[in-house]
Image (cartoon, rainbow, N blue to C red):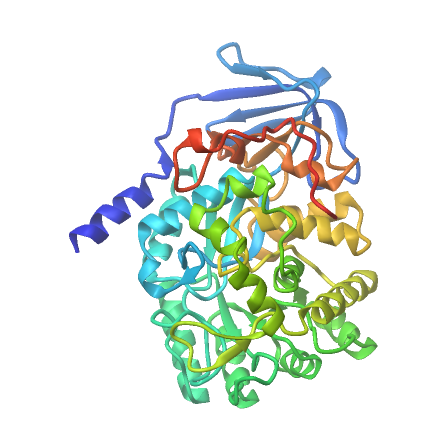
Length: 474
């Protein structure tokens, strides 16, 4: 108990005490506000007590006399990135286990997201209750770690796929599904998550539709939206008929058809997170960024050793793998190159059809990396045909719209000053989102990935700088 109290103290230390008339002015910058279709050169931003009080042309700037001014000449400022699908506190190096879900590990992950310019995350269904306490504290103050939106403990069918062993409690019936929703609603969760999958037919149990219908219906009775993990096209269609609000993954078993696209548009169903970077991670025997400082600074030495090992290459080639705590083998890498291509094609179809889309990575579990994957996800969106501005909006103002939070997601007067300062304009090349010069959360300057080195002394990370031109392969 004493250790938990200490851990919560460490976790809640990620807040800044309020200051009186604390004003910072950023001048001579190029502004991407997340709303307009073009960047605005010769702009300025004024932040007072963590909120934006001015964002516009330098010619209209009226800075308070006691303000701190920072000249951002040559730099571009965009809204803080929002990742709409993450899992926090799960991992030690490349091992996922409930025992690692501590306040200290959660705090470390949320700092890591912030370092990569991800200033808010939506955790989909694997949180312990203390994360909701953290979220409540954040909403009363000015955080210095990534903001949290939480689905609490999601709905997993007994014997089936999903969740986190030891945290999510599997259900077996529609009645139990309704009870789970009631319990989560009483805790104050932001969303309800359910998993509808059989891991490409490697698991004999998949959540039946009478249970999904009960969960979605009960969520709506509690004024909560329901987000589903799906894989199959026909499952997605039936969940839409039942009233699901969004999908946490792309349909990947076959091409999406006009019926699905029309259903999603007619009912306003969101593709909350395509998780293209997840599919990419599972299709690569050797990840091309293993020596890239933008990646290596943000992962543990144990993670790097595992990713560079022959054992991982063997797992990719052979396919089925048994993970600790799971009663079945998962085809983690088997046929994932085809799955990746299908996800990309279906993403293009949804975007072209005008479906509401956000940006989410499913980062946190093995093979997906807090903060890093958000940049990879935006790059893959552009690879799939979107413009850099569309990719940025999906990760900022569009995601804020999905979350229903009007205080974040764009750089506008009255909103929280969650900002990412970049050395170069990402509208010229989406990879420039990696050139992070500074990050602000609620006006608080926080360390960037170029100023950190995860789980080892800063002196151990001697390569890489914000001014380095990225060489990610997309």
